[in-house]
Length: 346
Ligand code: KG4
Ligand code: ZN
Image 1 (cartoon, rainbow, N blue to C red):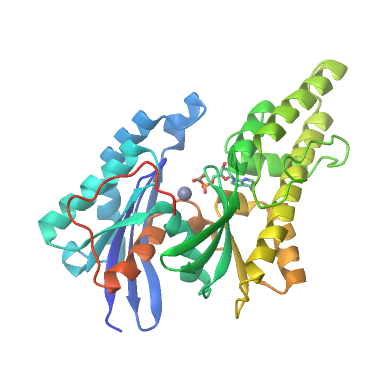
Image 2: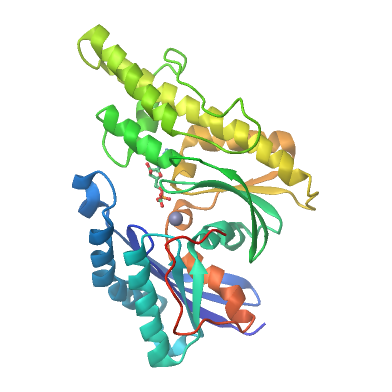
């Protein structure tokens, strides 16, 4: 196998990222992965502001590329191709990345490869754990929540997903409602450790329906109501009530994800994979109780469990470079007319 070195560029949400990856006979290795988050720019607005994100990407992306090349000890001349997220995502941000990649490609003559951001997430367990096709992936973060059966580099079967909010978003809103800091996930998880998950019972939307679709927005509304009831009774939010609300919320998410994963696994196992494997990726995969529940489920089902290291399963450019490799190896490339796509289902 000839050695291939590829640059990846990612800018579809609120992280500007660049990475260099090299593949040879021994497999693919991340030579560098630079991520510049924008969380502090958006914090005051309570969510990602597309206009601010696009401007920030345009300002820092080329520095990310320089840093990634310099960390890898390489120059543009050492590359064999340039992979860039071409969607789905916030259009201004995606455009910033696509324009930079086009410029670099035009200047160097290197092949340009447009990558689907979701394919980047979905293929990561192959990079980190060498999973074999087909495997089942639960992508669960602040922006995503779906089950994908990954059949090959370009074939992803969606078995179900959220019909409204992503769980990370629900964790973040829960933190806001309870007066906890952002990002909400780690804060709610820590608070939940002090609480009684059984005292305040929140709903488990869609759990009684067949299939793998999920819903988290009703849970958030129910939490707001439960909080207000607690506050009315005690004249404010007591420490104990806050912990019980956090624990009750987290427990509901654990149960929804576990039950829906059980169903997704059953569908996946119908395909009779030779080496059944399940991977969970995305920021919410950092949650201890969620991870433990999914791992236990896989142990019961005789399915290998994997959870890529957090730096590679939250937004990054190494996954984009890796997803671009297969097309580069196959001699495929996009033209300079590659367009940025705000929507691009797998
Ligand atoms: O994958 P990610 O970094 O970004 C995207 O959403 O694209 O995921 C971030 C999300 C945030 O909503 C954050 O609150 C959540 O992941 N998160 C967690 C934990 N750590 C991060 N949620 C629950 N428990 C955690 N320990
Ligand atoms: Zn993402």
